[in-house]
Length: 173
Image (cartoon, rainbow, N blue to C red; front, side, top):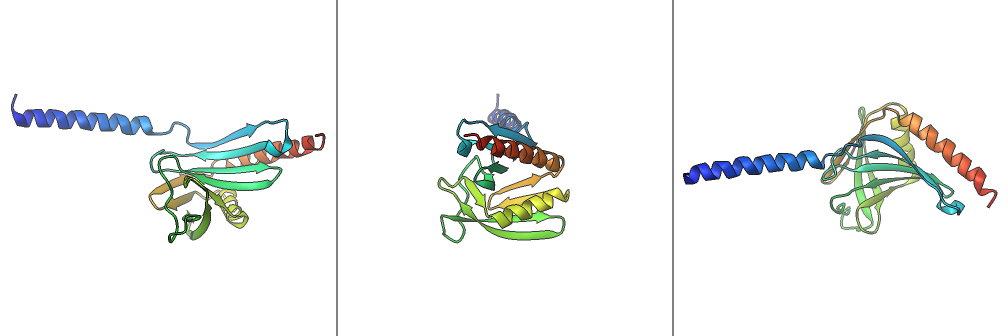
């Protein structure tokens, strides 16, 4: 076998392996999901909805949770750290694009660098866009995700009703 044939065979094999790696890394659970954390202590009871990432390497997960401490939203990254904003390790720049609106948000970058906390007004903006059936894109340096609004209102209502039950249960503890 000639050297060129060996190189071609190696290239084809590497291409096939790369394709398999790409397809095996794609997430099967795209879209909205609900998760409930049950605890005997009311402070630890949490109901959350989340939009799973479409790509664990370059995508992100949007999480909205409700507990006794209130409504919170987080952006989670799984592959590497989120770059800090202007050298500030506690801040990150997030761009939200929905319909024709583009908003740059400075958000809190949590310890470890793979989780962001949105402020209440930023959470309200995001929820409003999704309630109005606007497809929303979230961009960070090196990351992006398309957040579909399909079923968002249904999941948000379910989360609110479960959280209300949990608040009523906490009166008994």
